[in-house]
Image (cartoon, rainbow, N blue to C red; front, side, top):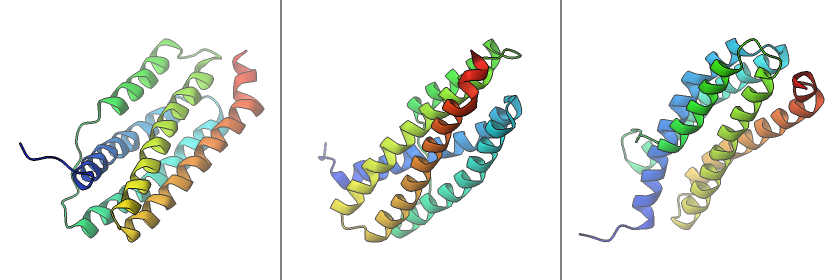
Length: 162
């Protein structure tokens, strides 16, 4: 068996996050619909729009690499999203629902921040300057979303849940 290198790992991880983003894109409207807080609903809707742009950036990176834009099932995001569904089911119609939804959304953001940070570093190592710029743009959005969710948790959602 031939040794796999960083370039193959980079493409595999791109496939992983591409799959993850598509699953997140499908989940966000459900989370927005379930949210009681107008602010939380708006945050989910805004991130849904951003996620569409993030998917497009990933497709550009695949194009730059001369690879087809294909996802590879990501067990990590499946698990995180399943936890979010569980919260929606178990805490429906309770004051704690929004706090749970927010926590689930932040778990998604932290996963994405980890992946995009790694991919950006690897793209730099591999000399993919255009990919670095695209990944950095998405990484900045993910960090901004996480920060906005944290502020929302502190300013309103957690207090309402208590």
